[in-house]
Image (cartoon, rainbow, N blue to C red; front, side, top):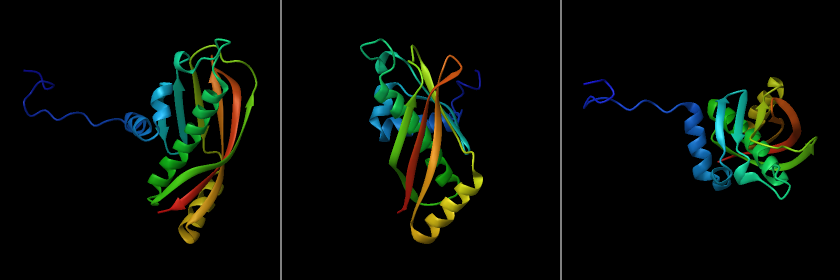
Length: 161
């Protein structure tokens, strides 16, 4: 009997990526409808992917709203993970965002958000703990075929529970 079929075998722990993907699909139904997958989920970097088919427009390219949603999700997820790592009981909401589309997206695409300013993050967390509310600006890039095709900038507000 192999260890995977042993009566006392324990199921393998879910990867952080699978855990976050399941969280997004459960709590943000649009993520499931878009077919969002979590490729990387760690403090400091999040990469989400989505297929063209459920996000297609009448030009057979990615619908701009889907592109914006994936970018927003990547940035929100990075803030969410950072709050968990900092053990701050808070929620994050988007306050403002700007998208810049550089070229059409003709297939499966991804959004990458990376924490580039550790000082800004530390100020965000300290302000949130002290005042119960804080704001941080996040940036993400949409990628297709290994190149940047759009960019996102958004302000997120953290609210202590």
